[in-house]
Each structure stands twice: as C-alpha cells, then as structure tokens.
Length: 124
Image (cartoon, rainbow, N blue to C red; front, side, top):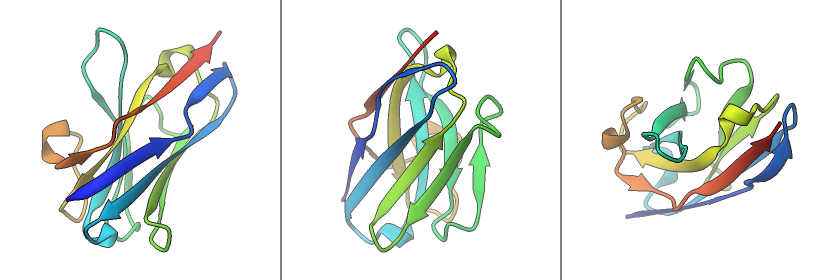
C-alpha cells in the first residue's frame, strides 16, 4: 500500500503561482512513477504531468506545458507540482497518483494509488 497526501492548493489570481506537494508513505517511493491529475466540476479526470521513478523523465499535458513543472524528492518521499502563470481554466481538484512502473501513462486507470485531492481555484 502507498498512502498519498496532497497539500498546497488554494485561491490565487490569474497569472499567479502555487506549488502542490504530495507526500507518500508506505512502500518504496522510488519504485513508483508519479502523476498529477485534475478534475473540474462536470468534467472527467485529466492528466496534468508525470515523472518517472528515477525522476529523469517527465511528461506534460499540452495545456500546461511551459507553465507547470513536476519534480520529486526521494529523501522526502514527496512529489511536487509547481504551477506558474495560472489561468481560470486551471481551476480543479488536483490529485497525485502512483503507478508501479518506470514511467506512468496519461490514463488514470494505470495508477494504483490516489490521494484525496486538493482544490485549486484561479480567479480572473
């Protein structure tokens, strides 16, 4: 089992920044690829960013490329999502997820463990 707890969400104005954190506990953190997803009201959960178990490879959704950055700290068992130049359309509940593979996919079903989510609201 892997337990994931997100933090760092909040209310920010358009153009602002937030950094989300996801603390992992349980099985070996380094054995899992990590991903960030988001879900807005009435919409399906969508992939935002992913990072390999080594941290050497990252992948982003086109909608956030150049604005968001995913990273991981093995010593702290934590994955981060730095979000810059935020837009109102980034408003959603953000979830982190873990997959027991080298690099996760964009498909939510490929991830075994999920956090409870953290709300991000961007005002215009």
